[in-house]
Length: 423
Image (cartoon, rainbow, N blue to C red; front, side, top):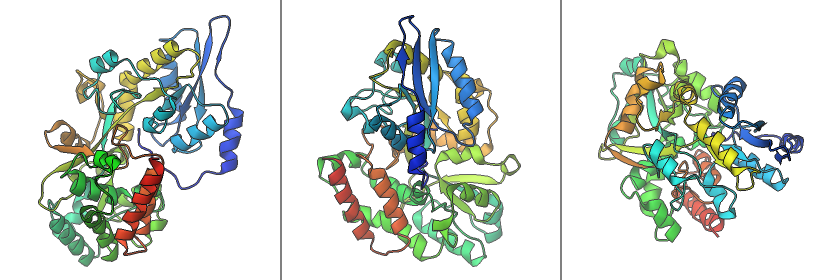
């Protein structure tokens, strides 16, 4: 749910209209308070979901009215900044990237004792030791989902090494099967293979790489990063994505993979919420392959809502946020519809009374197992979050690799963008 899933366009006029039409928060003399709450809609997080979840959590704060502000697309951060510029920064913000706001002192940290008492990884999305969104769930970005029937047709098995992966792609292509589905028209989706390669090959060997990049001791232009990024270029140049991959939307990529138009689908674990029930036994999963076959899990701890430091009633805003974040019904919806891996203490999947696919259970195993978990580059919400809007530059570099073999040049551009963003 915390994922950013950036859509390519949202009309500026629509953004401004929505910003101007939302009313500011208020606190009346009668003790009643209205809090604005920024949410967003997806196929699984529907208006009905938000209506019901808000009503349930609102019961914990009598006298408080929640006024929902719905982002026109799933890019919550851009919309929140639009609202801030118009003097209407929301009091509560769902699934944003906290690091983009903390330096301006816009967010209120949660009480650490409450965080410690309720979550499996209390510091999973902490920024400089403080938690600005409760670490309610986690995702793996990416996993590689595969069609078992298409694998059987080509006589291949799930690969463990990068060499195996390329061999599987070649055999699938020879068998007339498109090896890899990619919704390249949506920048975040285009970048998923690049995320997998750099997370596995670079952070898998040096988990502190992002902190070292902040310190200036490593760069994207370094040979090991260029080598990892070259893997995505290889998939392009060898023709392993579907034709016209940059013109395929994220939504269509899900449909096409589910319809058997491609054998593999590298995507965040939220895809699990889109696996059709009639395909539950046909979809398998494996981690992004490494050179030596070791398992590296690109991991990101997500969360629910952030609280503005300018909310008219911080205590009431916190009570609402805490109630919403611990709701079993909300977690159930996120598990089943959004493929979220729950991170609440003292609970198992059975406690949420969910009905999930075998591939969900297999994927969740990578969370519960002891393995090499590293930050998923471009998706971390903690101290490993990239500065400013560098995620967008990262996505753009991935799209560029469809049209240029100058991988080193694209990585140098990322270094320049990093230097600008971190000033």
